Image 1 (cartoon, rainbow, N blue to C red):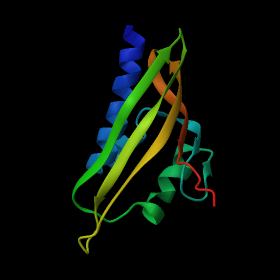
Image 2 (cartoon, one colour):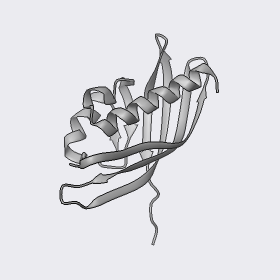
Image 3 (cartoon, rainbow, N blue to C red):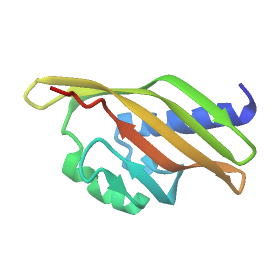
Length: 132
């Protein structure tokens, strides 16, 4: 792994840690303001960091105790000023009523280097669709 790939991995680990710890002001610290984000929850597409940030309260679960939000099997590639990463994300926690939840979703990130810093320009979170 080269230095840029390690830096991208670090950026994404910081994102996961900030999300897991509920540090909302840090979650999008390494995302571009004009990013495009596809998520598993409606409205499915966001066209700015501000739009995504404004939606958090409508879908963020109220949890008690530790939250699971961990990157798994992350593959990272980096060029001179563009990089990408993909893998799985393990999510879970305990609701106020004691019920637990957990899910594994797919994640893909596209990053670009701006002023020497790697920034997320696109984030895609998805899960398989069950067919009957």
